[in-house]
Length: 218
Image 1 (tube, rainbow, N blue to C red):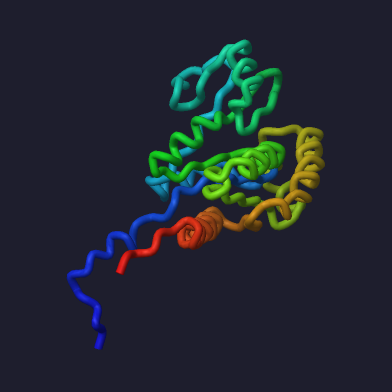
Image 2 (image 1 turned 135 degrees about the vertical axis):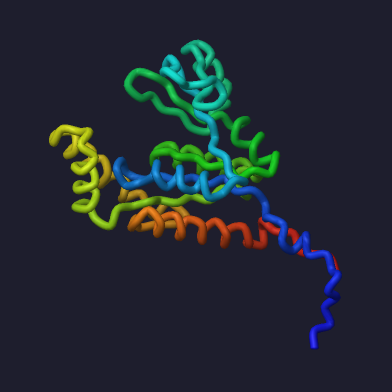
């Protein structure tokens, strides 16, 4: 017979663990954006890190919701001050993730989702190696197609790129896929529900790691 008191408060046992900084990378066309959207919809306790950019807002975009919009001088000032966890220049515009944006949300108890390329992932891992708070929270996942052939079919099915552009994307993808060993997890993409289920399993397991947990008091 169990000696457990039915009136015992199990709130500590069932409380969520230390918030996670979830970094997902993938080649273009592998399904990263879809997985991130599905994950945010399935986990209300998760929020995405809002990126800074120097490009002008597009119709319907809101400051602090879609992006933080900076002029070039303000972005450069923050970059020189070391405020960004990662940054990149794309088509002449700068993009970056502020360390304060990530830490602020983690400290509020929210899991934070980062959707970055392999170069950005490397920068964030390097920053976490020097910051115990980030290191404790960070988990990295590389989402990969089952093969280059599968990725090529997905890119062609999207119908948004010319054949020459697709071949260039595939060449870049081969270089990115070679970096998978630098991540904590390799998730081979299948169907959308399968990808979400596996990602959820990774997060639930990471929540239960002892370094992110507090044992109940007896």
